[in-house]
Amino acid sequence: MTLTTQVIGQTEKALNAILDRLLAGTDITEPQWVTLTLTVVSGGLPAEALTARVSAALKVDSAIARERLAELTSAGLVRQNPEGVVEATERGKAQWEAVRAQVTEITQRLWGDLPEEDLAVAGRVLSTVLTRANAALATV
Image (tube, rainbow, N blue to C red; front, side, top):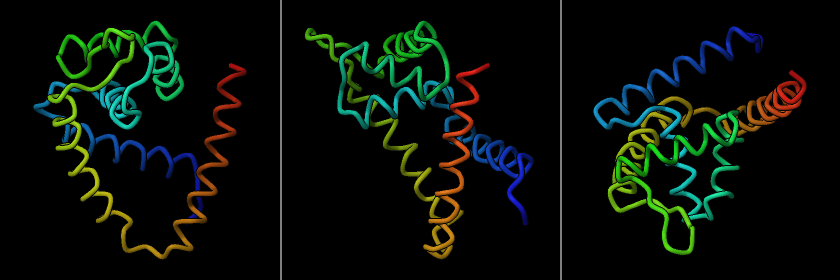
């Protein structure tokens, strides 16, 4: 099979559908999941630095990124400490860890048995496509 926009699109839709099902019942949307993930894995960042990362990851402006952080704050999943660092709450970490464990299990089933060489090639190709897509996005 050849790599096409259709294959990339169908894969992205299937993976997002899996994530949506894993997030069902958590009251966390996919953009909020990305935001929570960036918060958890960073270990806490100043609000503006985290906003910039969320904006870049979600391909949205900083106002929308701040909205995602405000939603997670309202839900009690993240908080801003007195020094201005945004960090996940215990509840936020627990929800993230529960969903992340399921994502890891499914990921292992999807491509855990594929040869390392194939994964390396796929990773390089998709990274190149992503870099070019980000450059194209900057021009539209």
